[in-house]
Image 1 (tube, helix red, strand yellow):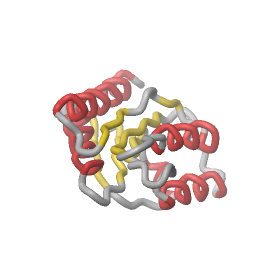
Image 2 (image 1 turned 90 degrees about the vertical axis):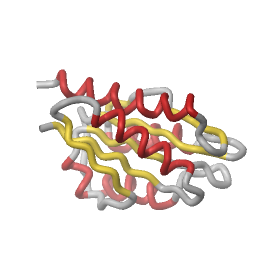
Image 3 (image 1 turned 120 degrees about the vertical axis):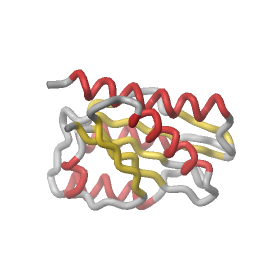
Length: 147
């Protein structure tokens, strides 16, 4: 069974709402196991076929835990080549954290990236939540077609 990790950080609860919508979309596809979490180790990343990271933007940067996680995985030489990576997140001013996450996943871990990231200014509205569901479903469908 293919496994999807939806990993997120949320101080205000906005990115958490987005993460739950991504999970809902991914779970709508049969044969896909989905895990929602806010912490994993670098070695754990190998257990998943797709990793979707919910990274809010605070002060124009990604959450340091995600940067450290990706750097640690790269330092362990844990190539995730062939695995799917995607990102989403809320923001107040600038919104670049999800794209920064995608850049790190692609350049440091050799993942296959799904772009663009899903963004929501402040609290996600119904449109943003639907985009999150669609992102989860899109990736789960892609995994279900892999042999």
